[in-house]
Length: 464
Image 1 (tube, rainbow, N blue to C red):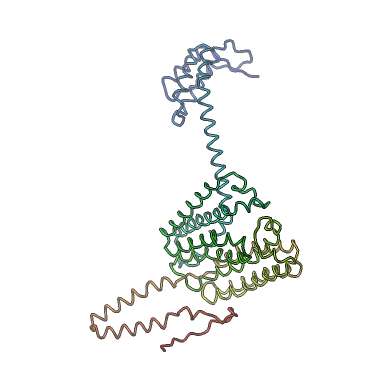
Image 2 (cartoon, one colour):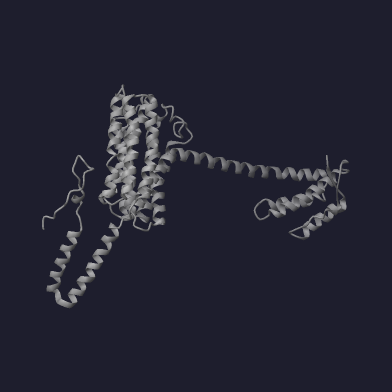
């Protein structure tokens, strides 16, 4: 075993060099490697003190205890072994205190970070953000406002986290009775209810404020209404009536509208394509989940649709019916100018595969088929949204609405200057009639119920 032995003269020169310069250099010419024992414990302490002095001076910019440690280490070269040991003993409490504080801060960050992640249902909230961001892109024109998209996603994330946190605050007793939820932060006691309520209120207000500030009041209003609908309507309904599933589907359909409103400031009829897909998609998704977790929902006291359906037949039929409702959405997206014709084909094929999984569940109501339908729904939504983004047509309607009044005002000003007020009135009426014939009121986009996949009927103005 190699040991380092140093001469006393080498030690003293090293210490003096450290005192004279802030960047001492080590002279290894006087250092030899040999295996005999150290001749003197004092020399050993002096050499350790010089090395400690060198290391501490390098870290003096970041360690607040460095000056004190530096003075102590410099004294090692001139002190006896007993005095050096006493100095080390005096520094030990301060060092252990700093180390303990660092560990406590690190553990607190990990603890609360994990609790907030679970309390916010972060993965579900990120799915909500994805739907809101998709709506923002669909409602944008040729150019996408990246800053606006980022602010919209951030605000949506905070509002979704607030809604999910309030949901767990209100359902703490129910979650404690269910196997899959009893380890959440509130039932397990890792977080107090007042702490969770303050967290939920803070992020909810912050998210709504951010949307009102960086987007518009329409987007902020949709976010606030969705928060209220989820936390104060859907959550208590889960313990009252099975209609809670359909109310929850409405909650899930609002974020794309929020994103569209944030990008364009309006909600035309074609903006409902993605919300409609989310609404119909959620029914088979949650029906499969409720069928697989029936025992947990019974223990938790939740009144789900599948609990009153012992055979599972009605649950399966509801799932299949809502899968079929998804079929015309691709054709409507193309017909209303939201996407290209390729999306109509891709969406139809995707919905057929989803409907097949639901049909298998209708024919044989087993946990295996319910799980297959559940996983199929997890694949359906991201593929559907990816198709919308891939084949989308830029939303030029908002830009046209903004630019048209400006052009008309310029024309009217020129007419007033040239021909006077009387003739300008006639020109204004002609221009107004032309504008009305070009614009199509909302009823013109209506289809023939209950067959929404039929062509849009022609609209004739009653004034013509």
